[in-house]
Image (cartoon, rainbow, N blue to C red; front, side, top):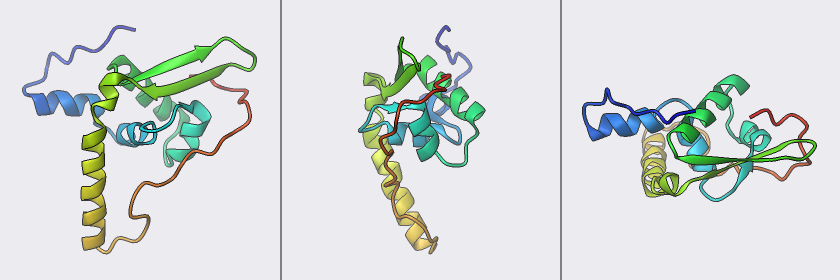
Length: 131
């Protein structure tokens, strides 16, 4: 699939948010910052997303060169995701956004986790690694 060109952007901020914007992309990038994860692992740590939307977000991030998808030809099939070099360049900004979010949640007295500390658990081989 050809990479999106984002020719309709007006400025660098538009360009950046077209690539990383959306409800789930930031969390996907966050959880891939230290680990190589399989589709099923991502489904467990990225809550509130349908399989279709997770697959779409993963495809868009791959098309934009922010993550890599490795398919292993074995039975059952195994697919792994990891940040590309370009995706890793975003990590300092993701950390800054997390810090800002923690501060804002505390100021607004929003209950819940102060940071995204959920880690993917190791799992047995998955039978349905469709993407």
